[in-house]
Image (cartoon, rainbow, N blue to C red):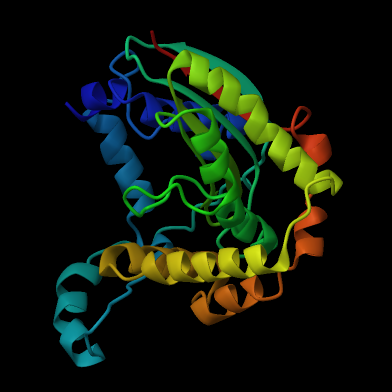
Amino acid sequence: MEYDAFQTNPIALAIDALHTSSFQRGLGNPVLVSPTTPHHAHQVADYAKQVYTKSNLVIVASGATADELKPHLGEFWNDLPIGTSLKSSPSKFVGGETRISHSSSQNVYAIAFPGSALYGTNVAPELVVLSHLLGGPSPIKWSKGHNLYAKLGAGISPYVNLFATNIAYSDAGLFTILISGSAADVTKAAPAALKTLRDIAKGSHAVKAEDVKRAIASARYATYAATEARLSGLEPIGQSVLDTGKVVDLDSVVTAFDKVTPDTIKKVPFSSMVFTNSGCCEVGGG
């Protein structure tokens, strides 16, 4: 049922295909198993035996003391085998292109470039701030919004959705532009969105300091808000401990945003990347 519902959502299809085009392997593997290439129960069991071991797990708790955790550790942890740590190749952005036919009246165009990771050597705070500078539809009803893509989309059609975001993972990220609407609106919005990005990189579009400050505030808010829910906040902590042996310092992440300036944003090499190193997906409707 989940797979069938996924197939009816052109935006979800575009994002999934965008990962496949951009990474091919690893992060490029589909999230859901296709009925045409099913995974059998014995394959799941074999995988669980390799993964669910003490070497590949870390316990992260919120609002609980060590004494409260001890009974559960004894019940669920002691019987786990030690196992061996699983190793995976670093995520590699390769780029590519795909087109998907779809019966929906909604057309989607998505393009991605190497983005900022959650932590490590591939962190790029200027990309996160840039995604908020470009932005998208205003969250305020009846408001066009003040960011670049909100204004651009409003000038094309009230029915086109145009926004930028940075999708971050442990060792890689996707700086993504997503456009949805009618075929005519998407055809107008896609080149205009890419031109805006290239103009910023070339310096022909002046980025104002006050706009960068507004984008930094938006990035700070979004970063803190993403960790409010306990489950979504604990998962990256556990992943960081497994990868680096330490907890992600959220304050240092948002402090890095404050160092972003119009000049650092202008140095992002999007001018040459737009057509030479990107992942792209089109989902076509009527």
